[in-house]
Image (cartoon, rainbow, N blue to C red; front, side, top):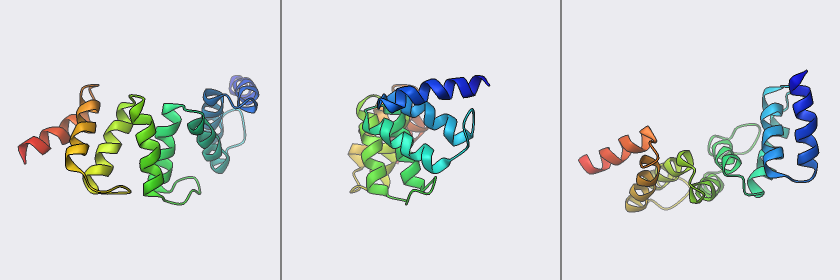
Length: 140
């Protein structure tokens, strides 16, 4: 019942295109908490939140598109775009994933110096994967 009440208020905010309201309603919709579970609808809510500038939603859209989740077609260039948007706002997971995309040339041209720069930004925020990848780049 608490989740249903949360969903009601998030829905009201989402109706006004409030980015965090869209994102939070997406989380509830993805997991079926307070509303019927609907991953396709959750993906659309995440997209609206990402388009509204929410860094966590942008990171989430990157994951959705990189992996082809929730009925969305796998799209590495689009995933890289969303990771980049979140990374530029300082999201360490997105910074790490931008580094991964650049390192592998997945969705973007390969760029090892660029990857190292993004790994460093994430590593400086204590992202362990970025710390490991950055260390490995120096040890190679």
